[in-house]
Length: 242
Image (cartoon, rainbow, N blue to C red):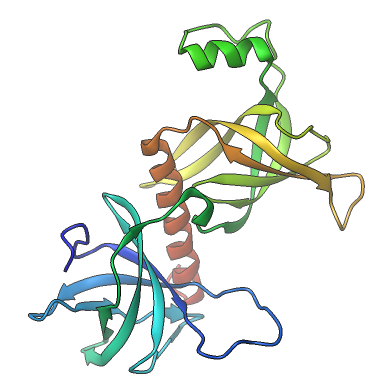
């Protein structure tokens, strides 16, 4: 086992389809966890559970696996080489088919959600101070926070909906609350507008797509961890555990 992967690490799985589908469908993400390592270097992982049911991947099924590790997000292809049951725990053995690669920012999994957010426009003057790493007071620059709602969130950026049309390449500071380790933490992050377009369902609203700007890696990992914990909470709810 690669020493960057540890027992207890969470991972997301995506099926690799052998046949090309006529119509594109949204890829389904399955959640699992590393349980053990075999003597020949294979991984024992938990079988995913969807809507309260175990997802029994067949032996020979190829999957894209994304591991959540201390080294960041790591991705490779795996193949199912065995399926087992120990008590009430369903497990499967997988073999890594290629080298682990660091996930690039554009590849971060986007988590569909509905959560309140606020943002403010960063002026050119403030951006220059940020670029120079200088301390400054926000008052008198652009202190007005606008209300919005996050539609999806990832380690690379946000899609949010609001009453305002913002210009491409506009710099923002966003803030929103996340629940981590049982505590609510307010996240502050800088971002820039990639595009802004009218909402398909309500022409009075606008969908803005932004990418994080100058986001500290520790803060990015917090967002990724929050997304994973929300996925776990959703799975537990589907299983009737909450």
